Every structure is written in C-alpha cells, then in structure tokens.
Length: 78
Image (tube, rainbow, N blue to C red; front, side, top):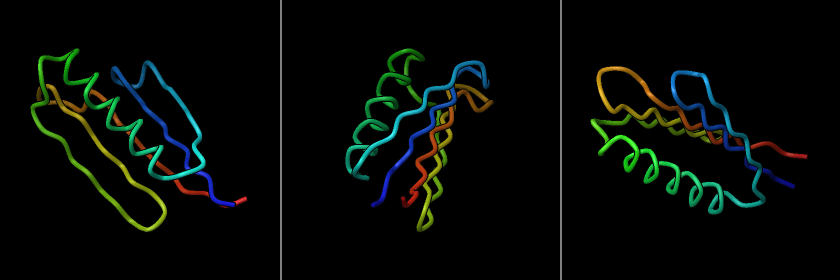
C-alpha cells in the first residue's frame, strides 16, 4: 500500500503541517489549495521552483527574494 505524506513548511521554518493521503491526486489537490492560500496571503507569488522525481515532489514558494514556504510530497510504501 502506498501513502503520500505532504509536509508544508511555512514562514521561514516556523510553522509545519504534515498530512498523509491515500492517493497522490488527493495530496496534489491539497498542495494546490496551500499554494492558492499562500498567494492570497502574500498578494501573489513572485516565483516558485518545483522538482519532481519518482518518489518525491518538492516545491519552493517565494513572495520576495527568499524562500517563504516549502511543500514536499513523499511517497512511501507500507
């Protein structure tokens, strides 16, 4: 059985949320909601970086010159 763990690190490593999902689609949907909320809170995104490999996806969100949030989705198997 595969599980997808989403780790959201926000506000320069001060706030962390962790959620686990049964499907990657659910994890990606939640990630999209977090990105929209981040953009609303910061009057938009300056830019983002995204890295994908077979077992993990990482996204870095910028509202200025520094990384303001990170989203990691990690696939694990039980």
